[in-house]
Figure 1 (cartoon, rainbow, N blue to C red):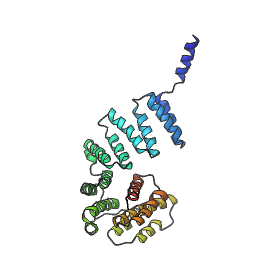
Figure 2 (figure 1 turned 30 degrees about the vertical axis):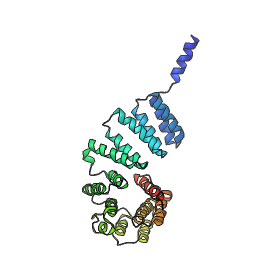
Figure 3 (figure 1 turned 90 degrees about the vertical axis):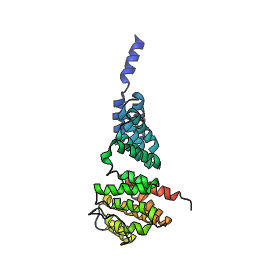
Amino acid sequence: MFFSAILFIGLGQTQTSMELLEGARAAWAGKDLVRALELANKAVAADPTNKLAYILRGSLFEEKDAYLDAARDWTKLIEFDPKDSDAFQARGCLYFKASRFDDSLADFDKYLELRPEKRKSHWQRGITCYYAGKFDDGKRQFEVYQDFDSADVENAVWRFMCMVRKDGLKKAQAEMLKIGDDRRIPMRDIYDLYIGKKTPAEVLAAAVKGDLKPELKNRQLFYAHLYLGIWFDLLNERATALEHLNKATDDHRIGHYMWDVARVHRDRLANIKK
């Protein structure tokens, strides 16, 4: 009788997977990632079929920049449902962040197989193509994106980058996509730099012009330094490129996929043997 009472109390105190997840979310909201991950691990162990547990734990791994650990949780979701298009998209992004570009491209292609209506808008795929060395494929991706949004300077820049690697700077400048009214500062100045009409100094000046709130100034400086870094890389001025890419990644971090692009580009350039 005494043993049964103890067993009953113990069972009553056992938390369910969903209760553990709620605790993990609360810990994350309180910026305690260690505790959040501990509870997410327990949630997975409590119910290995709970998809929400893998999603949350994968998100926590990504928050900690543990991209391959996060990718393993999305792999588990794909095992549960091989037609889960969102899982392929999420894992493709994680593989990109981990510099596994062929795996990233394979996942993006699978996502588009399942969601063909997203082909025109899939700019992440174009970026992965660039780093995978598939410049013709990347160029085509950015060209179809133009039908989705014709006022995006970044789309023109990434197509330009693919062209430089295949056809050289002059041809890329001569065939730069025509872009509509991209009002993000300093995007128009970046466009003009790439076609040879402005200088790097003018891009930086545009990014800090006016009385800007700190968050906006940080964001504008991030993009200025990212695309200046890429510009100097295209010119084979590695040291100057790294100066700008370090500023983008270390001094002006933003909560956007493009920050990871900057980091990937910087790390790849830094690891090239002189």
